[in-house]
Length: 238
Image (cartoon, rainbow, N blue to C red):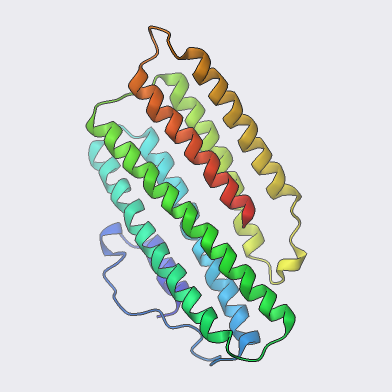
């Protein structure tokens, strides 16, 4: 089962079936151990990895805005399963690149393979943070903690900035030659995320201690906007 097929399976099928297929990923059925040809396929697989991250970002935002308990639980479960899938993808990609590294290759191919390893490491870290966010939201639901409208709007605005950054990231992952990627848009998107995070943090600190500012929801709010900013850092690294 090619990795790209597994990645698309994770996006298109019901979350209950995402991990049912235990078939081990097999790379490059027609390329053998030819590094140059394998690199082309690996870039496609990495693009699929990025698309899973985009799906996790969308699911997170849906949890924030849903009041349907069953829907929230389904989305939380979906994020957990996607995170397991990204763990598997990173392991399979790393093992295959390790195998390829034993073959003769050009310096450019070696550079691309190292880049793919670094990209997958950052993508897996993003998935880990979305998993942590799902745990935070699960606890929030169980403890009946509610955001005030202002908090919900700010989280939505920041999550949208992060989604936009992920879309730019995925556009960059779609190019044939990573050397052609222009960093301006990615750097600009991270700057917007950092600026918005700073404003949220300042408003949050200004409200702390006020009688109408619930400390429990404030703590959850703080954890969420800091986590989203961390995602932005890993996105720009990609």
